[in-house]
Image 1 (tube, rainbow, N blue to C red):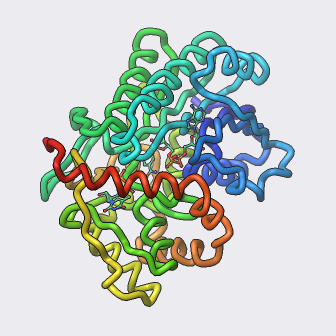
Image 2: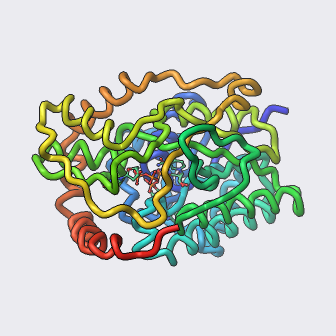
Length: 350
Ligand code: NAD
Ligand code: TYD
């Protein structure tokens, strides 16, 4: 059954994937009203949405998805047909340094949205989840939608909780939830605490590139626009109550990726610095996306070579965007993380 998409609530639309999705969705559904609800935490940045600010179908509200009164007012005003919930605390390292806010936003915030959807009614509620709920893989195999939950970080535990809540609100209350679980995204507007933008901007500034542990952890990289296209397919035609894995099919070792970035920027490998490993560090992620490919006809379009080339170029061409971040609040975090990392080497591992 086709979903009415006259008014769509996008939470976390000022973040990395959310801002790319707002732009993508406005292009695809030019007549929909797009309402972006974002708290503008350190990761939220309206500079990432400058080009859509003037669009009369785009509406921004600053607020917290855990704020029940605020969320209810917004639902009452707009009567959303659909919700896409990107809003989250998203960085594993920060969840090690301070887990509480991950529970507040990712668990309590998701519950608040589900409750509003229950009170006001929606046709579809897409919960944006992650491959990290499945835990870690050995050298072979891939995660399927049937792989059991096995989260290892406070971040992934909070995302797993949100998945379970979305499922329960469907089973118990009939709220039409669908869950998407995606692998590691990269592309324009990613906050430079995540691996790829951090490596690029450190290299551009001739700073060390911190590689955790032996650098042989593997991630399955997907270009952000391919993820946005997959979410749109799920929003338009995904089956309610289902889970869809979304992967890029690009498994790369961290150390290889760091070397590739240095090579593309003409920087020396002497900038690589092996540092203490992240506690609970998942070894390998790889997604089996067969279900979404077969059922919804989605496939990633960008090759990794093309995507990484475009991403590097974007950071080279958009220094202003990241320099503002690097010189501000991030500086504090960066220092803190370096100090904390010294204690990681002594902490307990699973
Ligand atoms: P991000 O950290 O770049 O953006 C998160 C956004 O949510 C920010 O704009 C922030 O201001 C907003 N936000 C945080 N707390 C909020 C709150 N309480 N109320 C309202 N807004 C709030 O994250 P991202 O990388 O764009 O990830 C978006 C979603 O996709 C997350 O749910 C994440 O778990 C999921 N995901 C990310 C990846 C990835 O590789 N980045 C992969 C799979 C899934
Ligand atoms: P990250 O971008 O934090 O994504 P996630 O942990 O959610 O997969 O990290 C990607 C990989 O890069 C992960 O194996 C941890 C590693 N990493 C480093 O080696 N150095 C760094 O400075 C960061 C941020 C990550």
